[in-house]
Image 1 (cartoon, rainbow, N blue to C red):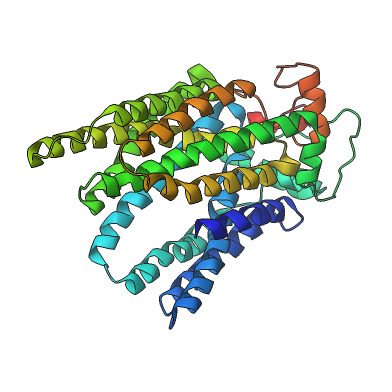
Image 2 (image 1 turned 180 degrees about the vertical axis):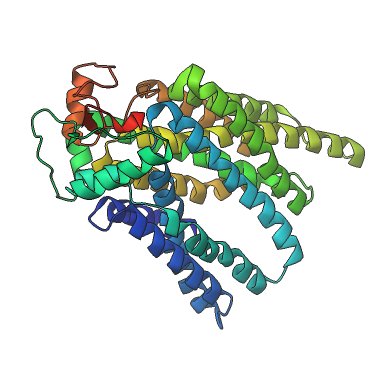
Amino acid sequence: MNLYIYICAGIFGHLSDSSFGRKRSLILVCILNTIFGCLTALSPSYWIYVLLRLLTGVSTAGNALCAFVLSTEPIGPTRRGTAAMSSCYFFSGGIALLSGIAYIFQSWRKLYIVSSIPSLVYLIVVVPFLSESPRWFLVRGKLEKTMKTLTTIANSNKKHIPKGVVLTLDTKSNQTIDNKNNNIIDIMRSPTARTRLIVGVGVNFMNAVVYYGLSLNVVNLKTNLYINVLLNAVVEMPAFAVTTVLLGKMGRRGVGIWTLWFSGVFCLMGSLIENGSSSSNSEGKWGILKMVCGLLGLSGMAGNYNLLGLYVAELFPTVVRNVALGCASQATQMGAILAPFVVVLGGRWPFLVFAICGILGGMLMFLLPETLNRPFYDTLAGLEDGENNNTNNIVASSSSSINVMPISVNNI
């Protein structure tokens, strides 16, 4: 399943950055997720099952990606962190709920049907009230729709946009709107974006090895599977709250480094704990102690896991934001693919590998810039102009994500 998601994460990243758009991509993946998930329950043979799981992986790849970008792009820099981290509670809540559903519906066919229903509910109840991203409208040259969306946002915030407002992109060299579909090649041609992508992919990969590895490592702890999955989900929620509070004080990079090293330290402690003697009581105590280290390591990595989505989104301009997130998602799925191979090593080795990944990932994050209270860029040229000029002024023309004269979308 993770292999299929890995293959298709980049596809939906490019699709939602193209003329197809964020909202239509989200609608498409919700429909596919519902259909293929339910059809999987009706699989008459193993190979039909494999095919349908592949198709389900295709839709799952774009679900969280499109929803996250669509929900964070219209939000200004001062509240973007809180909004992005708030969405994480639904992710952990879903995992906690899934452990209970799996306990009730232990038939895999029934479980697939029940777990596919939320996509349909989301499509009917939530999607009709969503608007397309105004930033996507702007970079695609749809100025009238951009203004209409911004006006709706302003009215909902009990504000108004003055007459005579002019929307421009963030590049000084080219104020015309380019409708071409940017891709990963364009990112690699940009020195600033290239460095950010390589480092971001590396951090996402190591984060996923630890995050998914600790979740799967319950098989080595010899404790109740359903309870452990529930605890893994519940322990993430306090991490989200702490991370949200610290984001405004320590910044994205500071919190990212802290959460990675926090997880790495507890994983290192877990690797130093012996399996215990032949006594069942002694073995049970050591197992519980290891489980605590694993839960604390998971809580740190969970905070980092969801922070990375926000951080990567802020590091790249609108024209390639979903492409970059798609690449990061591919790195995450590759880490998820390799995590089971680490788990089967058994003994102290899984915790030791997780510790190395956490500590090394924290060191890599020193190579990334801080994005706290910085607006989104819209174009790669604007990104290069803004970073090369070392400007930190939110309303400066070289760094503003959407320059609205005399008002900025970040103030709406």
